[in-house]
Length: 108
Image 1 (cartoon, rainbow, N blue to C red):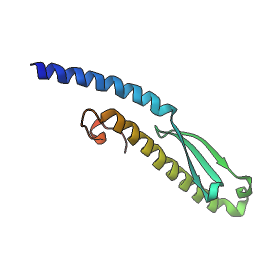
Image 2: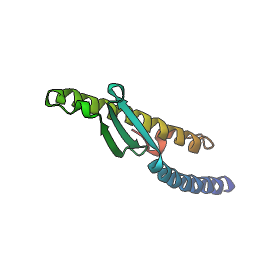
Image 3: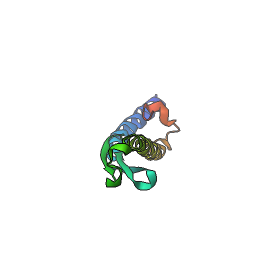
């Protein structure tokens, strides 16, 4: 019975830490770059796009397709960095419990 109560206490602590981590992830921002920095996408670790910066030199009608490709690439770069930030937070959170990060339903 004592083991069960200990597990319940541990689960409550984990839930509290998960809520705190979710709030922290909203404050962690990463930048994805493409085209040598001509396109930048800022994203939170919760995968919310916060901003896009496009160098004015790309604002030409004949550069439209290149710009579209660069936006996709910058977004993918930001997403990889956001996922890495999330994994880092999850490692810190679940390290003491021996739980795999995917078990808690976070990440992709």
